[in-house]
Length: 382
Image (tube, rainbow, N blue to C red; front, side):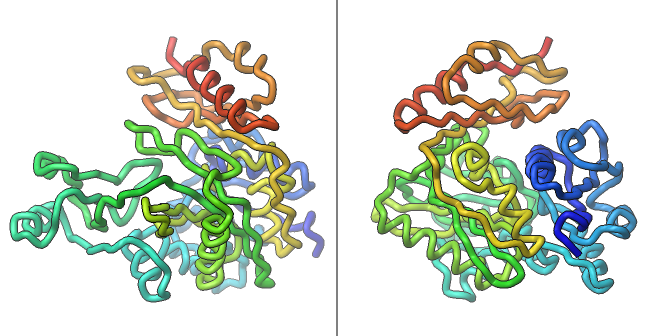
């Protein structure tokens, strides 16, 4: 069967699915999407959109019946259904057992520990009361970071305890507790692996996080860390992908400490925010690379063509309702600026409504333009 004759089923119809569909269309591939609302972003770029839940066993089984390959754009899917599809002989990438492990941050950390992959120290807690007791008993020192083991996404499910007073806002869920690492910066590497075992990485990028929303605000490519550290980061990311034997993309977020040690923060088994810029900035985009990987194609050239800055376009604070985009013309008039508006009808404070990638021969000029776009384009309500 040729690549173009294979039906690709994607669980999740958000912006990642939309951009995956845009790449599939360019490659002549048949991509179909399952999610709860036909007005979600991916409906605009796929061959067909099925309304149903990627958390519902029966919906997934029915959706996948005529698909040759099934993939995800979000981890929080019903993996029981995916395991059943594998038993039926379906190709499911990333593999369900990896999704089970990755979507539980506790199991993720244990995997790194077992494989000798460097990550920050951690303990697993059952609930908020156990964490408070550890602090009272002197077994846990402030500051530390609490991460919900499951269901965390885009900054949700993370609570930083900087003082005793912050204990009152602990999440009352099963958690991973880590020391608050003294980091120099956060970096990321996206790795692709196909069923044949071929591995290819995108260049390292630097990330800057929004101080309130706790999600990526800016992304800078190329990274400004030295070549030796970049090489080590790529080697570490590829080691994780090889240990997992994952098929598809693996986005690896890393801490670079003040003494230049690299620690694994967490991973995502799909296209990722840290790779949006590759659409304009690299020879192959992360979306095309994911499709190449899950279909067993040769992996694409990931070379950076020119420097780029990606900025997330977030819903304005204090605005919830039908989205209105102000000052788009000024942003479109900015040389090298590429706007990606996801088509979400409703805006909310700090909701990801789109992103902009600015390319320029000079990274500093790209940063200036990205800051202008972020400050100029306002996503509000009527």
